[in-house]
Each structure stands twice: as structure tokens, then as C-alpha cells.
Length: 190
Image (cartoon, rainbow, N blue to C red):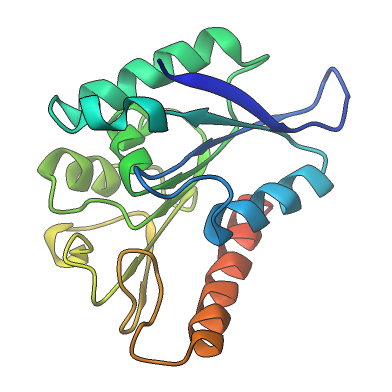
């Protein structure tokens, strides 16, 4: 069963809501999500996430789009308000078609652009409100499949699906990820 969790709260009843959509194997404790969660909380946001990791095995045998949209429907009845910000990683980017027409500021980390529905949704988002980041060594990062993208697309050279640069030493890979985190936080809090 999908769980909707409060990651961080400032205790204010009128706090704006940010929603984190993790990857299949990339939880909110992983660096590309963890640090932005802390930054959002420090900026006064109420930060929530969807935990679907107990159901991932079942989801891989069904429609991923439907799985993510069902989880979003569950979140909508749990969240104190509609999310104004979304940060999604990999599996979470299947939310793009569901959220593309809404006026949310969003960051899509390693979106599955090889899925035509996800790629089409990213091509249709509101200009200036969306950032998508992928690695050139990630086979699912195919910005060439998006024509006339309104989203800001950032390619991290030699980075894989975790946005790690495995051909370098760990510190260089961590520095690359810190650069990504800086861009994510700047976009979300702009």
C-alpha cells in the first residue's frame, strides 16, 4: 500500500506544500532528494512524500503510469493542500502527464524520456516552471525525443541514472551531485 508521509514541517497551518516523488530504488534519504527536502523545510515549506517502495515489485508488472497516478490520487486526499512544488526522481516522473497542466513548479530528475507519454508531457509544460535533469550516460535521458521543450533541460555529462559519474573518484561524483542539488533548490525556491 502506498503511504503519504510528512517529511518535514514547520508547524504552521498555512504552510505551502511541496511533494516529493522518489524513484523505484531511490528514496527520500538519497542525496538528490534529501538535501532539497531540508532546503525546502528551512524555507518554510511543508514537505510531504509518497512512499511506494513496498509496492514497487507489484508496480513493475503493471502500468507504471497508472501506478503513479493512483498514488497521486491517494496523496491528494491526504495532503493539507494541493502541492505548489513537486520534486520527482525517475519513477516519480511518471507523474508528468498528471501534473503537466497544473501550475506547479517542478523538478524532474532523470525523467524516463524513452516513455513517449512522459516525453510528450514534458514537452507541454508551462515555460519557466519546470526543470528536467538527466545524465548523458543514462539511456532513459533522451532530450532529443522532445521537440520544442518549454522546460529547462540540463544534461550532466557522463552521469548515469543516479546522476553519478562513475568514471571519476567518489568526491568528483559528489561534487557533480552538489551542483545538481544547487540547481534543484534554486529552481524550486525561485
